[in-house]
Length: 314
View 1: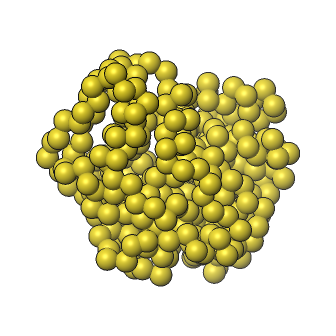
View 2 (view 1 turned 120 degrees about the vertical axis):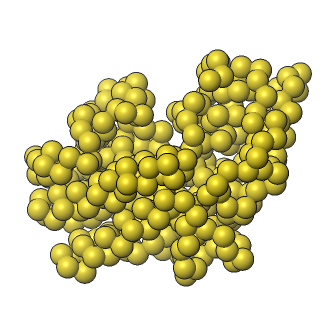
């Protein structure tokens, strides 16, 4: 299958590109390289993947690229993912996450692409809820513009399916972590903490540290996306481990990898827009995709830390 991956030079996208090339896909990566890195695609490009530098906010460029590529499927990963940025500039967040998604749907419609799989968020879309683990039937009430923009983009997927018959699927990711995640980013606490531990620096923890997330290893997410591309399921599917892990537990597990380093957390005030608990019910993923997360958090942290180069803390 010929597959286009937007945001494919990023953390998740580059891991997906590697996996799809190995499965025999002809892969075209679209990335503006604002945060993604061409170096992430070294192995995929060597195996035949193609990188096209472009911005999903450029509707004409996306139409031309998809028409020229004529893929059997698009995986739309390109996004603004920083909760802080989304709150500071919600219009910018929407231009990337909503308008960018519309541009890819319109490019798919015009080129006759039959399938689009969208990277949504389970960690930010549901907001505060008493239903833990949270199934797809719970009404989203995002606490940040990032989750709201992803929810809006999901609605456009449904619109294009109803109007034009494009098969669309929104995958609601838990908090994805693993090799290639940016240690200087704002959307990956595990990557940030791994970078700090490599630098023998203490981590900053906002709030009590007891807030929980559903941390899922990138290889497990990639397996689910690859399965979804080749299937015909539609709607929304959570991808998570169904396990809550607190920020302080992450600190504790990482500390065990470097027992001679002081990795005690520095506690700071809680930040606006962050929920206290997040954990996803993955029943629908098991039933429709035959998928479940395989990597325990301790093993995923070990693999991620092993792949983290020493850095200086920002």
